[in-house]
Image (cartoon, rainbow, N blue to C red; front, side):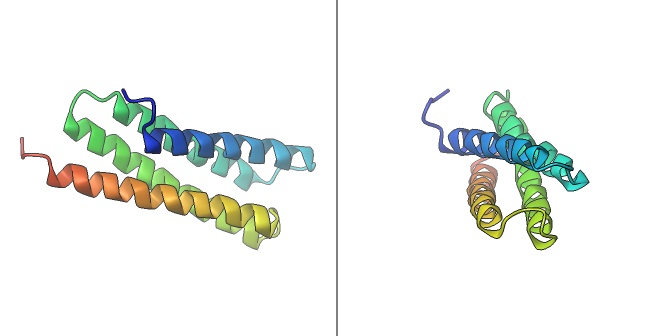
Length: 121
């Protein structure tokens, strides 16, 4: 495994930011139930990318990247909802949303490229 794998690095850094967001929301007092949702989906992106890189086949790699992509989309939804219900400051939310969008685009490109380069089994 290459140590400079962009999607691994970005998804891990995103998960770290999501955990810190959750801790920040807890420090604010009452934690909105949505915070647990964003914690789960936001950290699942990196976990699935990690599994994809360690996969045993191209098909497994694509499947795990597809799950990571779906988790990134879900996280994007929860972040928008937290922002639009005033549970999260706009500036912070927009920064996280930008990162989620970047991960979605990167994962989509990886999935498309991998599918094009995979021979039918």
